[in-house]
Length: 483
Image 1 (cartoon, rainbow, N blue to C red):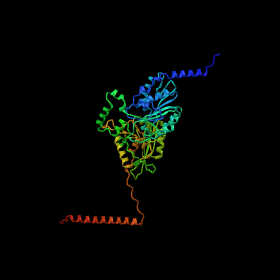
Image 2: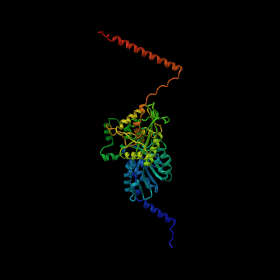
Image 3: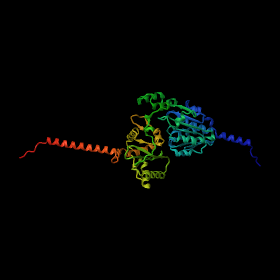
Image 4: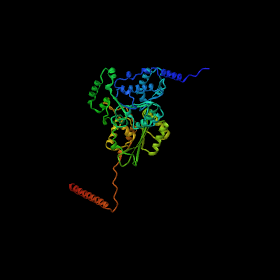
């Protein structure tokens, strides 16, 4: 009869197994992988950390290295990378994560379809997106060793819920860490900005100027590239966009915003009685679907965002239900949608299955229509709730200034609801409103006698003027000759 192994023997075998599973871990040394300014971020041990960087600073590489480092050091944990969309996550770090994992862990299993890498020690590295608040819930229940939220400046207001209510409790199993990483936005507001200046968070910052790989690859120093950019754009180093994009500093830059929503001027709750409506629909493919309902009165040029909805990964049936519900509720003048590309088929399907007529949005001259909407915002004719998704997104949609002679909207953050509002606003008829007529005073009141007296005086003046003109013409006409 064979003897059962002793407890000491079992522990020894477990240690040997763990040693084999973690083979190669010593080869993964952040001090050999990250450059000088990245390293403090990579080895940071605090639970809550921010990283404020510029573009081309090397933050994606630092994030990828941090994910693998934690996954190797904490067997069985989940190392999670989140940005606004799954496609962005794949574009930004998937290639780097795969390269590092395959180089430093020969037995790493790459699951391409899932954007997941499984390490021999049972840890998993996941890449994911959170395009709207509904996607926040999918991260509940994970045992996180580390989570990195990249492009944090572009996240709407639900970022606080994602961090405080969903991710923070998921750190308990492994005493995990949360990293908020991004570039300063054009307006120093929002959850990421608050965390980046909070004493409760550890902070790291570096810029493109600190990245030695720029000069190694291009053969030119970042300083010389900056000087060329300043000359090309005709600005100085103090320009707000230069301060943000090249030095990673939080500087107010309202000129960088596409939509000029001012919470004090344009913010009000939708609590009026409207008489006309238009519904705008932005159909998402890689992004989310969005619906915006605009309302106005016949006696006012003002227009309100009455209702809005944004949802990611919406099925056709779900979208049809939402459009039909809004159509039945508001009986709008029109439902306008982006029917470009696949959008035409989706719009046709919505019409066939719900009976809702959908017009094609005018997508040409978009920049001109944006300026017209901005004029309505500046003159206090367009309103939305201050806590609306539209208001929040207006603080994040930026101009791409890489080519000043060809203005275009930056791809760093896309707002579906802003597009839906723009489609609906072009079709709304608030601008045709007439000035309301003054109500007539009650008969025999002092106001009535005053108005009647003024009316009679005008009629008398008109009669006297007509008689005067008739006499004048009579004097000027020649006498008729008798034959």
